[in-house]
Figure 1 (cartoon, rainbow, N blue to C red):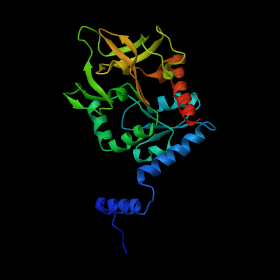
Figure 2: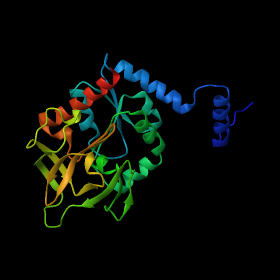
Figure 3: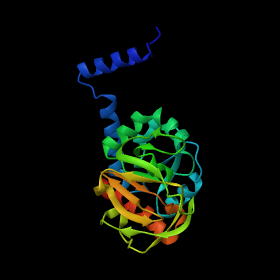
Figure 4: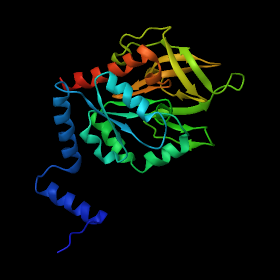
Length: 248
């Protein structure tokens, strides 16, 4: 006898499981994540690097490996509960990246709801916001309210190379990082959040823009930590430490 694998059939199975007092899919995913979190301090944290067709995947993976993590490239986000943290890397265009994520949005939302640390780099950070001016007005994920805008035309675009951070708010993610430290940038657009409290650090390039943001377990950097020398590795090391402390 064949089983009903349609969405309606799956919903029926889920309802039956709930009626019988069995854990739901979301509860099982949370339980798997908790088990992985409990093990994270005793081993190298397993970090998913989301492969949505942008560059720098191997670069960020190598950076994570250098600071004691075990990175894995991942296309199917339904597997996120198997990991201790998630990285959305960044180099590419906003619209194609949002198209990839939109099809797997629920998996990202569930990761955020679990408190799974999420690091979003450059383009990845911009994807956190409601919308972007890049390539017309395009909808983002809306995890952080605000808009991604183009850098001023009076400045050299793209903003390439080394620039300084001004640390505005202390956070475990910025442990060991001070105002005046240099990081590597490569972008033409910048996020403009509605909530000033999410901004941990800013940078100047014709306009003062957020270069580090944080909200709950979500972290974003407009610069590329994997290309920013020892200070960039410190950022990644801080991420690993956050994962391990959540497991304590």
